[in-house]
Length: 356
Image (cartoon, rainbow, N blue to C red; front, side, top):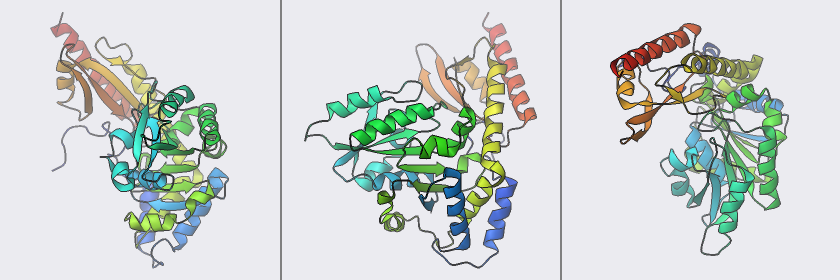
């Protein structure tokens, strides 16, 4: 049974497909095409991706973000190897050990600041592992936008890539919300990924208006060798593959990806501003993309959750506080944002009256 609470601010995974993407999915399913990625949609989508990144990159279409991350890193890592990533990275904390399970490799985490890792933090981890008793660092993985909704500048990405390549390490980017980062920085995808030196990108569209659409975009072409075999072995070579690349065609044409991300980012900042003067709601993160993290009393959280379904973390029994996450989406409307602001302000005001 469908949840009766307001659920759309819990995650950008909750909303459906953009009408343009739904339309092309239907069109693709009514055609007869070759299977296993030999279809015309795959060929056209690859050209679209190569054009937007302005690179002769190799492109492989995949069903889920976790699968895309694992497969991308599998091209870089042997079982004796390790990847260095943020302590908040999705591959470390929110993918059920998939990387370790499917590659046998190790994850070492670097301390993040506002969700991001820098070369100093990476060096501290890298230098501590110069010993045969530890797995050998072979790659660095960064998330753009980060798990806290913050973004790496192009200069920061380039600095990490330069360090990595000077130490014979590869760089993987988890780009589940890459569009939101590009919109926030007003940078092109080429500037953010191709020009900075990223070796492999997990390019996600699912969170920004697609249905099931991820792509491994490989810029370091030697890493593309045998990726099709990795794809098959990873159970990600679909017979009717065209449903995924078809979505990328609609996603990239007419800047749909950018317009979707801009709407999500704009509505998120509007909500953050609207809640900024609430007495009992403390926004913890720099609101750069489409995520807001709010610390609040547990009892106020309980009142909010009577109407809204949201993810809760960091419950502090001593302080009697917790953190909730708000996420806006490509289709968050002005009315949606205003209703949330009004509801939260009212609950905050009532909570203050009861506790004075």
